[in-house]
Image 1: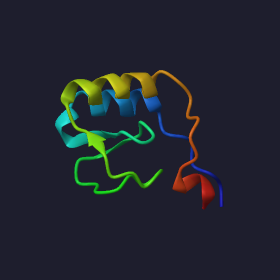
Image 2: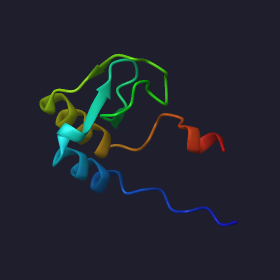
Image 3: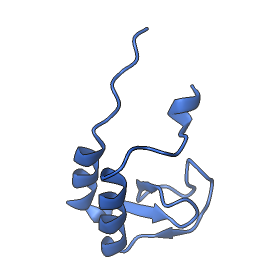
Length: 76
């Protein structure tokens, strides 16, 4: 089965930055997760910062660089 291309990080970051109320930033690993998450899927932390300013800042940081973390999709 051919691998799908990686998502466009900048486009995803812009989508998050335009709707920060739908997301929050994990205080354990700085990942951005949906506002409904109780645990971070990457580090299993339960502490989040859901302020719009923090979500937008983190989205712009992550959207401007290559992925460096291992996600569940990388392990499958």
